[in-house]
Image (cartoon, rainbow, N blue to C red; front, side):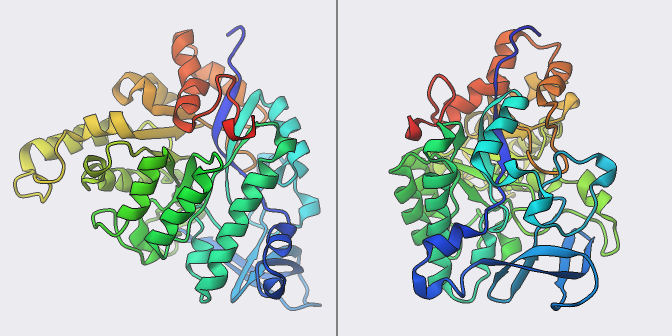
Length: 407
């Protein structure tokens, strides 16, 4: 395609630099807030959908990594966090240091250069250390400090990562204190006032010990999102449990099934009544791909039509699920030719493109080429919508595709 549109990626990632909380927490908390130390990796496994690292003591043998320390948590940086620039065969489950990752993972100028190389104009970036919906802080014992950490992260996201040096090309994505829906709402309002139009949330909150979307527990948070036009962004893995089949299943099983939690989550939302209570609410599924969506919509419509009388949804889900999907939900993909061949069954306006930089699945630096290959059968106006137009509308960007809060 000549003149292929510049990509707006709705799912990239930032690897937070070591100073994020050190510089932004009150001085009395800097020695107990999130901080980075260098230490050996004693053991690291990823089986049954669960990542389990064990930090060694100083002087222990073994490879060295940079570790985030926070309360009892010891979380290393890994090659899976930032794999771009390495061959697929060199991407292994191993700990790394900041020096062993591509600088664009954590530095704004280098990120913009890597975006230019990949034909990407703008990018929405999910967290790394807070995890995909900030569940690191939801698991903390000291909730007061955790709330300060959430706010500090959002301040860094808006003021530094998406600050003047980003020239509107990096789009802020906030986190909230998941343990308190009222506080979560307050944080949505605080960030919306400075132009933030997206917030992280869990695909399946009960996996985190939190209420489901079938309850009204989240209503203050959802109301805040609906009133401010803030998109609820759910990334695979945001329920701290990747889909798997057994405790000894290798990581490849979870990798092949990454869409499964999105599938469960979408059915939850469509049959929860949330979209009827909050007609302006919008949600998106990052890195879940899209090829599975048509069958789920067909099946959900069948259940709603034939079984809603005894299925517990007749009085709260007032429209067919496929209609709710069309009005409220966006699926996101980076490599899904099957989904693109079935785009009409999903909805041209319900699909967003992503590059997943700097993760191991990322199509960087070939995201344009991948898109051209997989979208060759689509008309230019459809390509424009999928690659950037839908993201501009959903995230309230300028006509040029830049974050309006920075312009």
